[in-house]
Image (tube, rainbow, N blue to C red; front, top):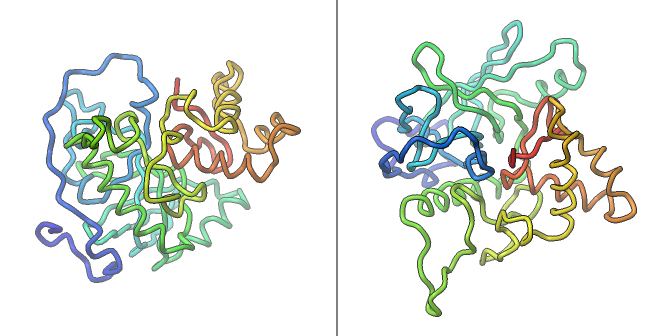
Length: 283
């Protein structure tokens, strides 16, 4: 199931979570302007990334017929090597192993604290971009954090399978002629519990659709903040504290922070300089 020697007993807790993706034919060249669906976060296994293909112009990687922008992986750190400006990790998810590069500010207390959490043997979630160094694929991380709830490991495996099947086989028609799944753009994620730990229920309600009008009011309000001209013009994006401040009196701080976390996991926004500054994927 994992193909060849991709399985590593050092990360055996992931056994059964991988699968062999079907390579879909590449589509026509995309338009120059990226849409919000092009920017969607993809949950993947390392095996999928290894089997991914690069576009002829070498500008994008394609998996399941869709170009990659932001990706997220879950796995165990099997190697940690500190360098002058970055830390190089080896991540194993049971389907394969991949190098993760995390650039750090050596003078930052925040980066030092985060680095101390990412120890050998720890299970982590990685958000990043696929890059090629010396002909070898690796991930440049823009966010890494330890996993504290192992339900997230199972959820990530199911999420990867769901997205793969959605892209390669489409949605199944229900008994009333409609889709069993709420319509969503390519690579969109099923609704989580807001904390990145797992599905909120057995079904996927329409609130998970990325069309703003179908989102809960608090998510629409937060996206409106991220989509302002000032927010889009900023290189660092908008901080969670700024969003809390702008929505004070309308939504509680706790609800705003949980909704921001959900939108980040859902691929509607992405982190920039750290894990509390975000920009909208819509532009």
